[in-house]
Image 1 (cartoon, rainbow, N blue to C red):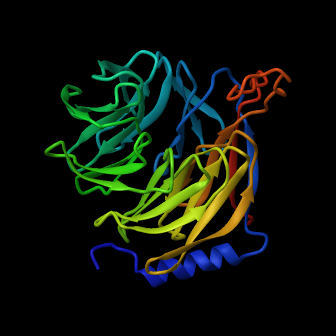
Image 2: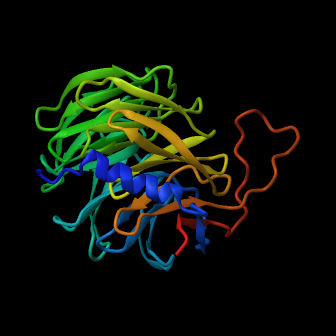
Amino acid sequence: MNGRIPVLCSLTLCLSLAGRDPGPEVLRTFRVGGEGRWDYVALDPAGGRLYVPRSTRVMVLDLEGRVKGEVPGTAGVHGVAFSRELDRGWTSNGQSGTVTVFKLSTLEVEKVVKTTGENPDAILFEPASKRVFTFNGRGKNATVIDALSAELVGTLPMGGKPEFAACDGLGRVYVNNEDTSEILAINARTLQVEAKWSIKPVADPSGLAIDVAHNRLFSVGGNRLMAVVDAGSGKVLATLPIGAGTDGIAFDAGTGCAYASNGEGTISVIRPTGPATYEVSATVRTKPGARTLAVNPLTHRLYLPTAEFAPLPKDAQPGTRPAMVPGSFQILEVGEAP
């Protein structure tokens, strides 16, 4: 069965988990503190580490919320990718337009690489080609770096603003195009865009996750919709309602469920109801601002960064972000109650 999870097996497990009482909930809140905004968190289940971008550095936490170290000098950092096999990590530094290469075991910075486009945002390590991809928001392109030599390999035009990315582990990379409401399929070895698939009516897609076993992509949009897409044909299998302000989605192969993190303060739980049908099975209450997340496939727990926020002034312009209460940064741990 080449390691793939049978549809009925994962469906049964997801139905079981979703049907328990009281269902997924916030189990713990880790009061981390410290200054700086955040973006995409990354979780290393084998190492028991959570990598949290914090504007000027990456905080490294254990799964009890304790700070174990930092990767410094990451101006405007958005995301972290890593390879335990190579003992390396990479950060996408939006403000400085660089990638910081660091040693995973010691957090020692080894090199800083200049990207070929402005505002590197999402970052991904593709294991088959052993290449690192940064998706550059203002540059509207992707920078490709050799993970072994830390040298530039090439640049891919994206035809719009790229957002989050995912890969199948076999040499194919998928990325959301926010400007065109498309998913692009990229060959990581040839650096060719092999397909572009519209996911409309989903608009402004940001977070992207993949179910490798069943070849499914989950893409969340800024208009409170998400798409489930066949990763081979690009066919949209389902369009489902989610919460407002979403910026991330994670898939857990152990439960068969996808989890969309909504900045309004909820998680939308998406489960399969058949081989090619899906539904929103639950809405989990979190906290406002918890718009990105990472999943631990070993424990089926979710980790979401957020903080406390001051009320907006009455004369605030539309789109103004509320100020974070100093020292209030926190990580929410969400899962089934023991």
